[in-house]
Figure (cartoon, rainbow, N blue to C red):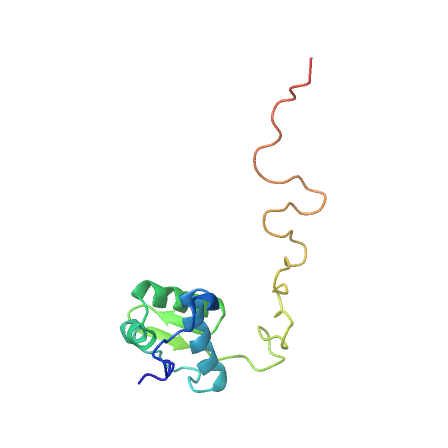
Length: 138
C-alpha cells in the first residue's frame, strides 16, 4: 500500500479537510521538511503521484504549482520537479518561523509602501474608472 494511503483506503482524508490539491501539496511538503525528500531530489512523475494519491492529473499539477509558490520545488521543463535547496536560517530569503522573509510581507499583509490588494496606497486615488458624472449638478 502507498505510504500516502490511510489504512481505511481513503488517501486524503474527509471532504472537510480542504481542497485535494492542498492536501497533496501539504503531504509532499511534510516529506520535504522531514528530509525524506532532500534538496535536489526529483519528485515522482505526475502520473505516479496521481496513482499514489488517487487524484486527477489536474489536481497533481495544481499541487505542484502550490509547492512552487511556497518555494519548495522548481520545475525543469521536460525533466521534472525538483526539491529546492532551502536557505539556512538567517540567509536571505529565509525567515524565522512566523516571520516574513526579506522583501516579503507577513501573510495577509501588503509589502511596505504598497496597499493591500484591491486598495489604493494611502493618499492616492484607486486605479480604474473615476466616479461617474455628477448627477446633482445643474
